Image 1: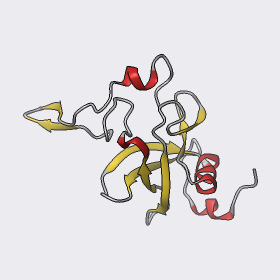
Image 2 (image 1 turned 45 degrees about the vertical axis):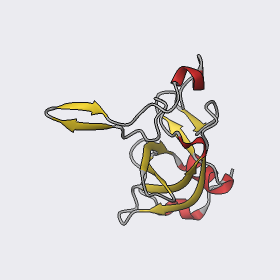
Image 3 (image 1 turned 135 degrees about the vertical axis):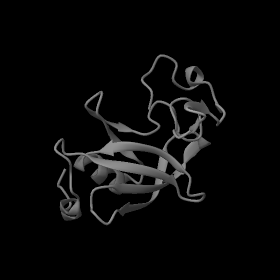
Length: 134
C-alpha cells in the first residue's frame, strides 16, 4: 500500500501511533478511544470503515469484524496539534463497547468510586462467544 502524503502531517508517537476519538456523527456522543497507525488510518479513509491498531494483539482490527458493530466513517478530523484524530461515525447496531454498551464511557465518578450508569444493551457473550472482543 502506498502511503498517502496527508499522513505526513500527523505527529505519530514513539510507537508510530496516534489516538483516535470516535464520535457518533449525529448525536456527538463520544463512543470510544482507540489507537491507529498509518496503515489503519489510510485504510479507514480508503474503505470508509473504522480500522484500528490493537496494541495488545499488535495487529490491525476492523471495528465490528467479530461483533458486526461496524463504524461507518462520515468524517475524519485532525486536532490543532496534529496529534489526535477524530472519527465521526455511524455506529452500526448502536453498540460501540465490547461490554455490550452504546459507549465505552459508561462509568461516572460519584462519591469517590466509579459507577456504571449506562445499561448493557446486549450480553457480550451473545455478541462475541469465545472470540476476541472488538
